[in-house]
Image (cartoon, rainbow, N blue to C red):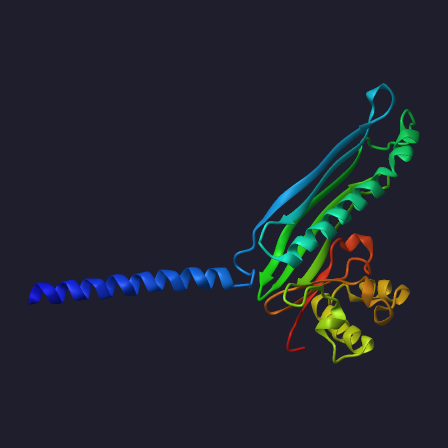
Length: 242
């Protein structure tokens, strides 16, 4: 009798374990939230363009993200990201003639001109993905140009987010005031110099020029387009309760 009971108990335990495995696998299959399990690979466009006498004119190394997760919107997004990468590379190639003109001159221009772009996932949570492209460009000017461009995507709504999506209940002027208060607090000693950039380019009329990145506890606002070059990359974080 005891032996029979142990057999029954063993069968019940096996059934429980089997059912758990089935439910776990089904949960994985039906989970459409890509957060935490976001597959992607880094693709790269590398080109070195030379002129007469094999003089190197342009050196391009452009990385971009290609998603591998089984999600139809991400597959569509791959085409957009690749098109953007190719467009940026082709735009930089327009510097070829300028670089050719610099060959043999005595004006101290460094060749080849350089264009580098590194791409990575800056944020991924609750169906919000932020891609960051950090770029470096040296093309004959007095100094190289650097920056970070953020792309914010809502996978559930299948759209790229704008700053107005995050502050739908506020006017452009109210959004600008929130940001400027944060700038005053973060850059007390340099505020007057920073403010001069906003006098030439009023923030409330140019919110579309602001870079931003969604984060868990707030929004990172990129002010680089507005501040003097000497400040480099300039950003503040606005908490969501603001």
